[in-house]
Figure: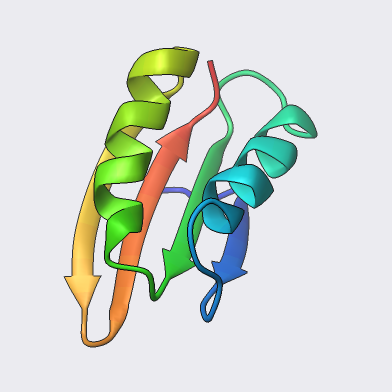
Length: 75
C-alpha cells in the first residue's frame, strides 16, 4: 500500500489525533493516503466515525504494540 503522508499522533488524546488528521487530509489531494499512528485506544473508534462522517475511506486499521494505526484515503 502506497502511503503519501504519515502523521505521528502518539501521546495525543482525543480529539487531537482526529483534528490533526483532518488538517493533514485538507492539505492532500484526492486519492492520496494518510497513515496515522496514535496511542489513544479511542482513536480506533474515532477514525471509523470520522471516515463515515467525512466521506474519506478508512482503508486499514491495526494495533501494533502500544500503537493504533489507521490508514485513510482522501476523498
